[in-house]
Length: 192
Length: 324
Image (cartoon, rainbow over all chains, first blue to last red; front, side, top):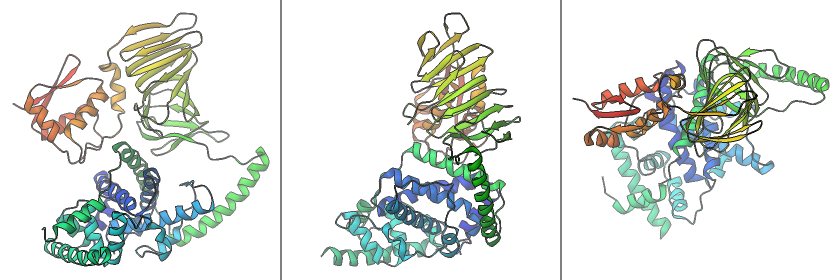
């Protein structure tokens, strides 16, 4: 379904520099923003998590099968990485080492499914405007939330959103319109 | 589409995030790219076998670690990294680390405290704290700490951003060089040491004297003699080896003017515009694509072609102009 993403990974695994550039440029800034919106962490910690997540993704490129958008796959790795950091920091001072054997099992068993155990992700202050918006987005169907965040958070074009979601441009536009309407309804409910 | 303008504003305001710094993204990119390059050389093993093999290896490693610990009295900790090899030419770099035999370094390999390096060809090292270390051929050095290396023989070039988290000192037989946010070269042969400052300032702590030198200065330190100083150019053929080892510049999404400033810094030549149109084009053009594998001058030539611009070098300056 996500042929373009799968092709990108194939090109990366073949050693094509341009493919790596596309991968990094499209994912790193978005992942940083993705985590910044959801966690109360400082920017340095977020950057470490994203860097570690991308390194783990690189080590596991052969496990990406194109069953979900590449960015969705990366966000799952980020979520697990964040959960891991939260767990470790609860036990001891946070000090992540890439030399440590990483959790292969989550790469194998949770490729595309978010685990309920990773909910420390939603650490944004619910009393803030961002926290409130994130709370409402969380209650929307996932593809609505993804589309709205991509459009209004990451500033992506409708064409890019369509590509990410495996839709035509018209279908993506229509999805965005439905997502906005749904968000509006729930937002008014939430802020009433 | 503005069917819900108020809602669009709510979403935009709440979801806006300050972008990460260019420098941090650059560092992150270097780390991830190193991993990627390393992964190309290492075929992925079967996960089940991989896990079983890992258990076996872990057991073997535990036995080996115990033996080593008993032998040397304590288990060694992972040593801190000064940086990692980004690129090297033909001859490569040999490393001797502690009790282990010599081995050849490859791209992505870390230089750790205590490592002793011998270069057979030139090499580029990305420093963990930002900046680069460029090594000339037939050089020999030791990583003393994450902020100091000892140059026993040969040629190194240090490029550290002014806002780097940590300084790097180069120790030689005749004294040590401390930078104050700069680019400089140190050459060491027999008992003599030559230091050339290309940008910023350095402090040379000699065995008897301490000297501050600004960009465009060469210091010559020979045994039994006072430190000699002379003015030098910060560009030209004597610096070409450093631009051949320039780190990759990712042009995708960057402004043309940003790219030109990078070339100017790499070549040690000021940049200027021969006409207002060229300056405007450089300011507003966003670049796409890649100049992978191209040294700065060739990369600039190719990029300018796509923007209907050209350049010429007059005196020390790179002049950019609109193509005729």
